[in-house]
Length: 375
Image (cartoon, rainbow, N blue to C red; front, side, top):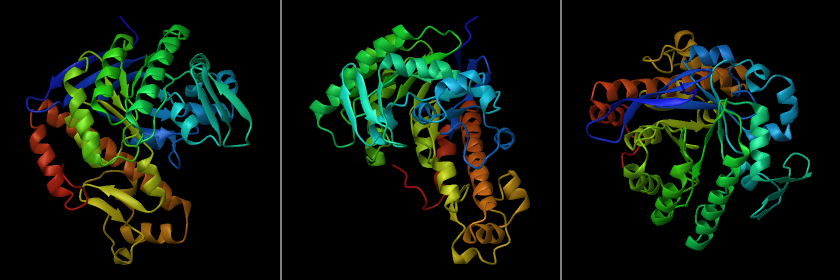
């Protein structure tokens, strides 16, 4: 039996939504699933035990940041990410490609790899596809991503095709370098906002997609309807025997629309980022607790949520914590937001299995009111 394999449990009869199980050495992942982001080998403000209490199945760590600090060799010496961060469930590491292009003070992209200056201290580095895989091998996550080039939103067709073609060439080198059967390598589909490039990239990527396939370069500033158009174009062409991962997407409406379009895995920093800024994601839409209207509101954030925050604290108390910059306010809102998104994925999975996903989508938009605009 393979260490990594995917089982499709149910396909929704009216949409592309599906429920499945991704088996990994560190446990099974029920899909669709949301992955909280632990950029620096920790999910900001949320302990591993709290993540488990929130029913988190898998987390994402960032290759670029861990390469910069503390260094992948140190993580390897510690026994890999699972031991280093005391997380015994599945972990996914991204390739670091997006950060190399977006965070580095300077970068120079060539076919052989990328020269860049660290955003930390300005030091010069050179990462090739082979080097990226070596770093991810040292980090030891269950699922690792191929090194790719993400062209910016607004790039021309020619520039987008160049990045897509380079990504495919790098993918071949990544696959040849990767020899660790304890890690599943996912390739990444690129092509910017051009449907012809997306289909070309998808077709050329599928032969490398043994365990899963990722869609990169979306949710990078484009309007949501355009992202959905690209996803609609790709949906009929996905393999059915592997999970599909939409990178960097995590707002509740985008999760619903992504699942509707056949996506199984998502990640995003949004849950913890907006939590630190005083915003809660709830069954009734967004709640900005720092607002004055909650000064004397002694009700929970979300009366349908069973997280520690909602069971113990009121909006008024959380507003107080946020407004006086007490770290527990950020911690509680982050925990709640992760719990909410995990529960949202669980509810969608149950609706798919019960063959009532379309009804679930209608209720989601009805309950959240004007927070999210239905496409």
